[in-house]
Amino acid sequence: FHSHRNINQDVSLTVPPAQLAAMRKHAVRAMPGSDWQPLEITPGLPPERADVVIVGGGVVGWSVAYWLKRKERIRDGVRVLVVEKDPTYSQASTVLSVGGIRQQFSLPENIHLSLASAEFLRSINEHLGVLNEDPVDLQFNHSGYLFIASEKGAGIMEENYRTQRYAGAKVTLLSPAQVKEKFPWLNTEGVALASYGLENEGWFDPWSLLNALRRKAISMGVYQCFGEVTGFRYSTHSMPTDDSHQMSFKRIRYVNVRMPNSLEYQPVECAIVVNAAGAHSGKVADLAGIGSGPKDTLAAVPVPVEPRKRYVYVLHCPDGPGLDTPFLIDYSGVYCRREGLGGNYIAGLSPEEEEEPDTRDLEVDYNFFQDRIWPLLAHRVPAFECTKVASAWAGYYDYNTFDQNCILGLHPLVNNMYFATGFSGHGLQQSPAAGRALAELILDGGFRTLDLSALGFERIFHQEPVLERSIV
Image (tube, rainbow, N blue to C red; front, side, top):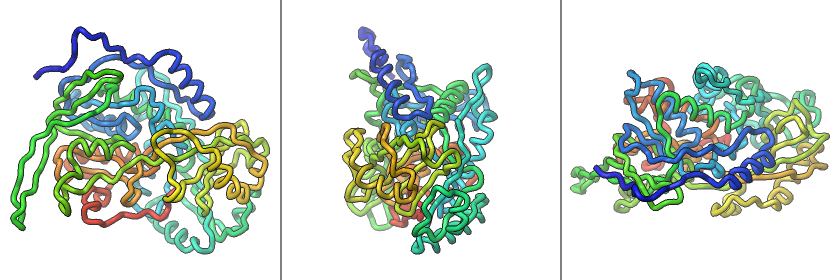
């Protein structure tokens, strides 16, 4: 076994100080409620061998790493490596999300994932506290989510409410008069019903959770590496099927990791690969040949996850709704929430399919706010008639084009590649429970705490979507 390191080449992974300073300045301006800052980068190649290689160092990847170490039966019994290609996290979906957590879904699996994650966050220092380090502060704001339904959507909201209550979520339904009494700044025209989260809902700082998971996992012995996975080396064996065809099964033996700003790469021998590459997980699956098999076979089915760009606008409105503002989701699709204590608010809207923006960059379209968001937002919250956009940013959803729900589990033909991807905007809030579930699959051979078998890859091949009626 030979490393492909050139010993005569001095490879520096350090981002120039001016670039780091610019990233920090951008973070403070665009995300006033966040402690986000780029990580200082430690040069170095990954280890030559690992039991589990996790592709993607976002909040989902680090959650899987934490739970693998938490569940190992003997110290250092599982050698885990997390590979992240963006050393500054400047384009990471985790950092660029709006930080919400809710249980107001229609699918029991989504409700249970978020309930379990909320329980994790409530006792986060019991999980992620590190000896002699400052305690974790998520800056959790427990203002709840307020979903508003029109007459057309009221029946679905009532059905969702019953599902949520049965699953254990603390949610209440409000009439338009009750909404107006509780939130007098809200225009209830066209409102037939509202659903309000009483516990475990609100928003928190995404960077704090990511950094806490990372810090704890590293303290438990997880290896991290900044580099890009550029390919896999795998073995293949074939088996005859009932219709006299051959079905090929793959097993990944090595993960090739290319170092930043370099042609140098390191093959990492491994037993298991976890694809937690978020918006790029479909491309990572392509590297293993997933989706390139004969037509109308399982091997031809790609991983239906791609990046989708979403804009987030920071509004300044001194006379806005105030400190009791929940995470408001209007039936038009427009959302807003308070951001900090200085009269700032965050707002956004998922575009229609035909108006999806170009994903080649993270540039913001300010006309999208003026033309699509502001009229709807000002109608629902009249105070926003006198607001201005203070700043904005864009981030990527790991969008599952099949049914907008996560893919959690083992690929049926690449028998050591597990998936934790396709959350379509729910990854941050569901990451603690999703990481635990995947660690159970890997170490215990099946789900133990939550039954999430409906979220496996098989549903995609069988064309059986698991659809969520409460997409935001």
